[in-house]
Image (cartoon, rainbow over all chains, first blue to last red; front, side):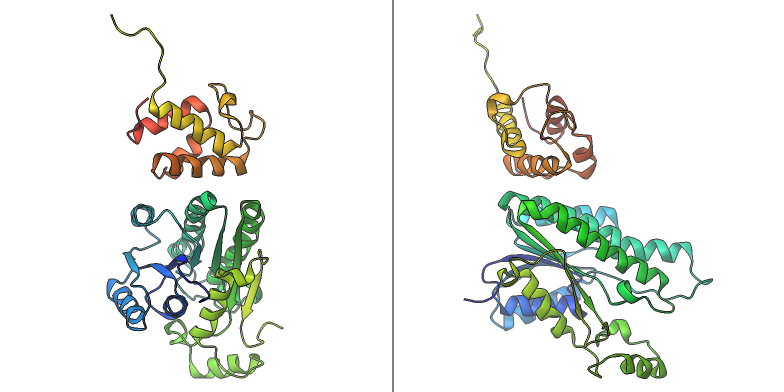
Length: 248
Length: 87
């Protein structure tokens, strides 16, 4: 029996990076997936890869989680597709760096809307479906920046610290309903989100990672799938660092 | 002559059942006076269970604004009419 055999899972931000890696990993473990992202092309590519690896072809939903109408339409699509939701991976997020004094109100609104407000709305919607079955697992993707902070990432750090707070509160509320809520806090992962970090800064970052290397998206995906599965059936309200010992 | 016997619509029967399941009370206890935060057991946690019960019973998805407005049994009936439920 595979880890997520016949489990219905919804993954946001599934067209690239950690979201895509999680979709591929969950597909390998037998999950039936609903994938959401802004890029249809990226979603189609992820869906095809899952199918080519022998997984069940996922449903795809093109949606910008930052737009309320788009998100409402996505909720409708998920609701029409399934009345069963075993796990949710709340991964969609954006990164907009700026140092104090250079942070615009628009930037704050954009980052908080995508990384935190939409995440709470999606979690709330998913919990409603899960409550019917009195079981489910929600995995929110936070960040090590939400725990330790970082220069130039006041807004991003605030959004990810918010994700951790939301995770812990939701875990308390939903535990009596049989719904678990956990977060992963990735460290520096080799995805397009870090592509613009200057080389000197990257070397400095590497020195802070005890394992001395960047993480791979698949390494985060495996932890997410574990938290989504029954292997962690007595784990809730936790923030699992996937950071090679960066947070020690 | 129309039948004078009072009948309960299918919508009403389903609404009572949804409330009973959501609030964990007997169907006999479901009545017009049920109110959020006043009726024992209808707290914020039970409210979400009630919403989940209404969603699944009527195969709809209540908007968040309606979830927040749904503070009594009569209000639930009013809101559900917007979703095409007949009483």
